[in-house]
Length: 573
Image (cartoon, rainbow, N blue to C red):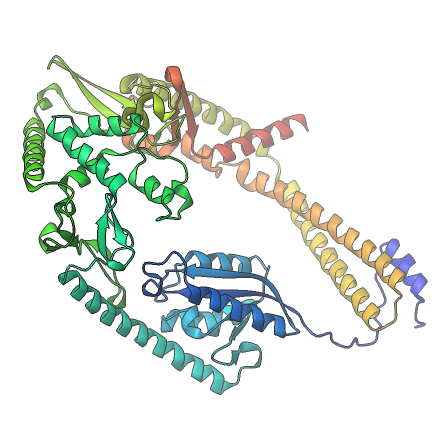
């Protein structure tokens, strides 16, 4: 058959005809890899530092290597500063994998395999299975490893190095843990930052010295307690006085760099409790309250007080022994009174907090707390209140809210009843609209198959045009016109396929009893009373605003809206 001219091919493409399949084989172009770098420093390597020079050196090495390679284009360098290599649950690594999975990059460069990870099994799985399956090239600069040119011997060496890295990681973790425990026994400070009221000695990071500004706040907290002020009262005084909470204070002083503490956050009762109980303010070093054994696969955990390590007289005291002992006596007495009062009003009746974790403040967004109130020892009632307002009052930025639980439960029962009634009515309507639609479903499926074949042909035409252009058989203008035609046809087909799939989804899932909203609400009877299981099964969030205004978000609201929209379309049609 005679070969068509280029103008004939353009005309054929414009009229929807297939391009000639006869073409010369194009010379393959050199592949360029969209590349990301990855750098990591472990927890021990970053101890006592905000950032590490070694991390910057890794990134500089990676950047220099990528720039020297003609087939690599740098997109970004991801990093994890202070993250263990014994697992892959690291923010920087996970962000990098998201970019890889999204198709933004197809090459990874690391300084060496130990920076990638020290877990032999997981690292090997990524290198031998995950990355090859995704078509991702992996380069380890220090090890001279490139998966695009990896021999069997290279793969064996990589496996052995991964195994050695895991063994090394366990060994160094075990040894460093022993060293740190020895430092703790000798009263040397090993924390990231000192307790509130102290700072690390600039001349010796293993010693702490008094921070005059914060120490004065600590003294006032103890003095307030000695005067009989409650912990909640001390918290209100601190917040109303505009005294920065410990983390916000450390951020202001440059000790912490976490942006979460850039804006003022209120003091909490638990923080005041911990300060009043801490022997650090007597001049004693209290450490070893937590233990991490990564090498043994044991997660970080709190230790009982009996296992803490306390070394006396290691630094200057802020509180005298007499004042500290007096405060402990007050705290112990209050604790005994609290436990003595537990169950005191149980004869008046108790009720479970069935809305726990569902009720939020409409101003600050924090979970609201359920308060128990006993009136004259005869009647018990429960209210929801914002803890932020309770701690800071008007300074919290939250409006006063004190909503009775029984009023909230009544409102929820009414709303759930209306939701159930609507779901029951909708089930009947959806069944009516779905009846006799089998022919339409079959027709849509057949059209989808045809459109997918047409799309495949359109994509092949685009590849053919590119290959002909690279082979010199098409001019730039001819190529651009053909590409526009092919791309336009492919987009038209994709849009039609997407619309048909949405119609299929609507017919098979949205407009049937399989719709999650219908399945959840349509099968319920109007409840006599709201239970914990029912509340958590139906409600996603309850938000309380000023003047007791209530906003309730039910679960499956998106599925509900999709169903109602689909029904409206069917009715109009």
